[in-house]
Length: 240
Figure 1 (cartoon, rainbow, N blue to C red):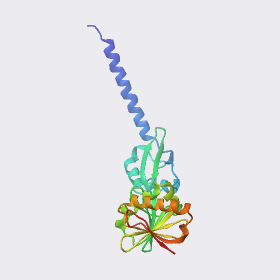
Figure 2: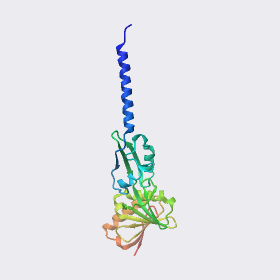
Figure 3: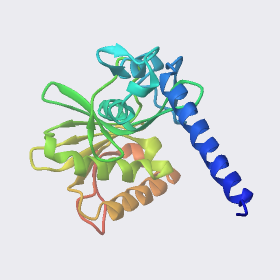
């Protein structure tokens, strides 16, 4: 009977691979988490620091550092970090050499609301987020008759202003009236800008820019105390 050495070598090689894999897996599962590394995505928001994230990486009421890798529930840790109100997204994973890494993307506010004695941010996903003791974002300030259901409208107003280089520098806040209209405040000038509701918002702000361009050139801007944008195709001004 002729022995098929190639077949036998193949079986032995496969068995060796299975053994080495099993040995490596067992050895790796017994390895402990030797270090925790937190990495924030690039950005200007500083609402959280490494210590805050470390406090979220808790399992069995203890830090995961020095715990065995086999008992680490990465999904649960990741969900815990993502649940923090300052976090937009997070990824948690283990490296081969026993480092638990957390990559965190902080939420980005576009407006700050102050109403009814409460203050909070509206982020770029039109969601509310709390203020931070570590950092205050310089964003549009919204006050007045604001309710929780207004988040989408505030997001629309804030992002439209932020996406325009001129308006971003000039408009610093807005007050929402009981009639569900907005009155804008500016960085330069004492004029009250009556925006009205947010219908035809882009056209209204385009009219405002055109008005500013004209009155700055002819130096008449200081003659007005109110600029009314409620009428889509015109700007109605009230003199001092």
